[in-house]
Length: 613
Image (cartoon, rainbow, N blue to C red; front, side, top):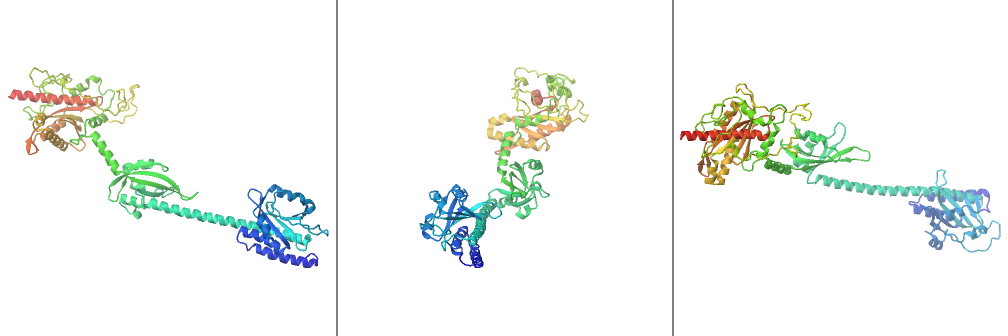
């Protein structure tokens, strides 16, 4: 080609270069592009052998494509040469622009290195520019963009005509190497894009599968699930709910989307909802159903981000705990109520009474006279008759305070036990077992009251803030309109004989009916409790002395009528003693005061019966 005229050589070289470069852009993959590069050198640039060495991620070069000899292709394709060996080659020989030519006179030292190579034996050149079989010509390929990042090296051998390439042949090879570098970069870019698209498609498929799994888990979960909006004006609005939550609340999905949990929560539980943390928060509260009833649920929150920096949503798991709450309430009721009558038991009575009392300084100057102070308010007594006895002939008229036997009518008289005589038929109050110390929720293990109802600090004597409404007994004058917390102690008369004669089943039936009659005879806010056995206690607030006496009469008259059990009629009586709760007294002192008065009434009635006989 170089023997022809220069214009013809230039035109022919450009035409061939144009054809093979055009084919570079038709390859569809990186492997096809590399093979097209090697084939283009043999086909269009006048060389019998061409090899493309591609830089690997570790920096070494691998034989990626070979053209011109199938035997050589099978032998060296895929073999790797070290980067250091290639850099040595690219620094030897003669520099033809970007090309590197190593004549056989220098290249013999490269025969034993690790770079894959193929050469043939042949005679020594007869002319100065004749190609020797061991001559080497390399065309480095650099990444486009002006940098010197090495993408690979094209090595050629045995140019047609047997002569070294002239200036236009060298220029064509250099231009081809530059275009090949662009084609390889584009092929790599396409390959990376294809891999990215494949990876993206797989991720999208995984995302769709995950979304479908979440949708099924959300929709078909056995417990309620909800997604609510976070932030903004619509914070807390329900965006999506599952069928279980719709069934639980008795509402359709479209109807629920008009609400937030704050719209559905019970008014008493709104504080619990607002205190619940958005991330990992839990709460037990009541939600409104469509029929205006409420159901106990457990809410568990978690925050879900829609995208990396997108809006966040609140995923709430709603579990129906109505049955558990019902069981808890039943257990609490059983712990605080009598199993037979359903009335508050002794512990609950003491707790309610304790909540009304405090150790108010100065309420009673001397603790040991707490019971006396109540007696003083109603005239006191000196043995014999009751304070507040109600009948003279069994269940008749009321004996006014301070006028019955055993009272001296003097305000402030001390309590004196009723004298007893042999064969009197009853024992003095002191012979009865005292009450066990009750459970006091405000007491510490030392026995001291840890809670001061009025905020009083015994160590400083200062009451900085009083939130407690003090309980005070009514005044001495029954007509002064003063009110207090009356404690009516009731003991059934004749119950033991019914129990012994007819059995415990009949006795239980009598207790149940007495409890019902007592409950019917008091106001809604009053407390009727069973202290134990056949003893009951009524707490009635806001009563004066006359009111309390009238209440005792009404309750005793309600108990007297016959009670039918298993076809037979049985009767019991009742003795009442009225005590008054007052801050400065303990629960036991209050109950003891009412109990003493009940026994005084019972003894008085027995004395009246004996005299009448």
